[in-house]
Figure 1 (cartoon, rainbow, N blue to C red):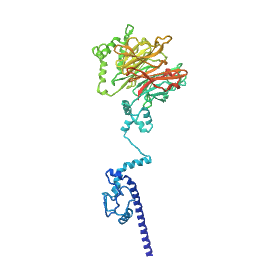
Figure 2: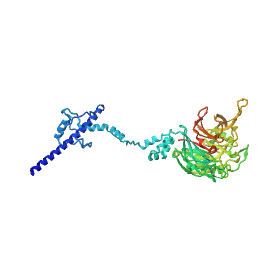
Figure 3: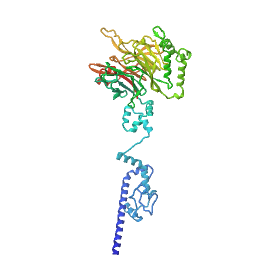
Figure 4: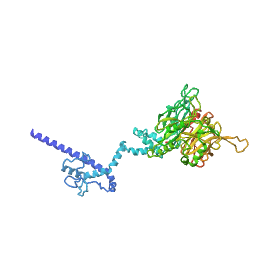
Length: 578
């Protein structure tokens, strides 16, 4: 029994030794196959200056032993040697003839250098193969990339992930985009009426791409006859009406006039409510101006009360406007008039003190805007001659000085060089000094002629004041030639207060209520009218920096073909650089 157990134990050890030898042969065979695949990269390795040729396998007893045990370091459990003798035998059986020459590195160091030089390529190939390649950018670099996207691409980028959406809606990002050079003009058309209802939709035109986009605005549904004004990146919707009996329809038989103000931000597609006006108005005349950070509306409001005492009228001009000749002197001598005649206007020193405070370093970089609303129709559909001013910082409205009744109904207004110019149906022109807080009448040369049914429109571009009016143009003398109406562009000379014709609109004045807005050197116009049972629209632009001041069409896509004819009266437009 004892002899049989000894024989059985000896056989068991022999089988285990045989199993280990097979495992060793299998692992070395795998290494040899890998070596064959790497043979193609030998030339690349030589270029890199690292000799990675196939090295002779050595036992522990001879050869270069630098890094001989690095197989364990790279996590290759199959490269384990059972004994020195078996390792040598296995190596001789695989490599054939033993080579006494050797390199400076053993197989372990060769493996280490090869993996180090090709690690990035292997990781990239593996990531592409399994489809899990992730590229992470720092937030500041990602922010610089996103801020340069067009508005349409930016809106699509916000749909990628929550991080991108939050990153592109921060005040810092909006400020960077506002100060950047990647902005393009966009036109926003409000007041669309479809199937008899005020749909509240906003039609936005990307001028550079000539593409229309539709923005839903349920908050404006049922609201019409409002006015809009652009202030930096926002659009202010002021006043308006809504039907009481037929909600959503353009029905003025029974309506309510609003005094609320809404603010729409196209960059974030968000809405917010601003402070309401003191009086309800529909279709008020609006103007936006940037003021110094230390601007005080209360001071202007106080001066308004000091100047409300009745005054005599000389030559048919109210003294409430101040002396019109004083305006000419002010234009001629500039600021010298304020210095040489401090007693010409009350509280002149206080206004000068306000200007000095605005030049202090602590106001650097601060922007403050005011919104002026004058005229319009009241709750009983009566014309208003009152006005209000809104401060974007304090979010409050303050009543300003009224114009006399004989000035007439306001028909247009615009801010130019810090002054709010308005014209009336009686062909009178005046401006409101925003800093000083009072109105000044302007006696110009002959007011540009215009057809009574077409109200003139004021537009301001880079400190230049323009007026667009429709007048009759006589024929060229041919018999039977009928006179035609044309829309002309006039410019006011601020020095001599004279009007000069500078351009002519190419389209026939088919729209009774066209809209013209300006931004930088461009004047944009929209005309909408119904003809042959279809509503048509024409969008044009004029570059005032060009001496010819020629007009061109910017959109051939008829966005108004689905709208009702009522949209011709309720439409309004704003231009933004986004």
